[in-house]
Image 1: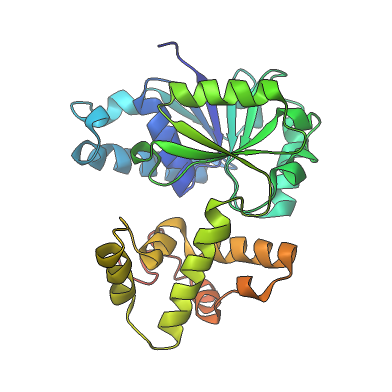
Image 2: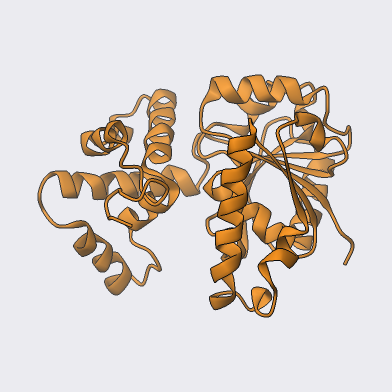
Amino acid sequence: MSKLNIAVIGGGNIGSSLAFDCALRGHNVVVVEKDEPSCEQSRARVLETAGYAPLFSPLAKGKKPQDILDNIRWSNELGAISDCAFVVENIPENIELKQALYTRMAEFIAPNAVLAANTSCIPITKLGSFHKTSAQVIGVHFMNPVYLKHTVEVILGLNTSEQTKDRCLEMLAMLGKKAVVVKDGPGFVSNRISHLFMNEAAFAIQDGIAQPADVDAIFKECFGHKMGPLETADLIGVDTVVNSLDVLYQTFQDSKYRVCPLMRSMVDAGHLGRKTGKGFYSY
């Protein structure tokens, strides 16, 4: 299998997980962060994942963490994406930040590269409008933890070209991923449904109906889900869930997407889930 040069812009929870998965499969990865402290945080996340991944993934068994890290480099210079065929944008769900980034990327990204937006809810067509070549932009929604998820949601913007789609699907196959291709729209399929799921679970806690473990147990033990909705919110980040719901509400103007006040209070308190050590659960 030939190696891909892959850029991951934004090394947070999902970005670091994606970088690890790509490096685990032998590809060359550069993680682009805003500054050196952020690079160090991302490096620590990848090293942590490399330590426990062999317990869950046959692909990781027998591989030393350093062997995986040798395939990754970190940079705080956007120019590091210039030789990458697959560029995954993974910065926070803030449309002003994304607009600034997509405008800047025009200076550095290769003309034939695939620019994959790993956004939660912002329409791909909107993100493409910020880039000089909207045909180059496609949505690729990786699920966390990336190295254990073999299927991704691929979203076609109105201007996404057939060439971009075909090259994207080819590269995803090289990453061991099956693609489910959907049309563009706020939240796509996965988050349009799953964020309602998490939000309503938070309302159940706020209303005193049950404890978080009880809610999650029902969905795991009765419905066979691998994770409950509140465990999922903690994994994603409560702040990310809130930001995504805000995007859905602003776009649809539908009250069903109103954010549960409990989750907004949790964000104000810094109880964001696994990344801060406290969310619906303590870690």
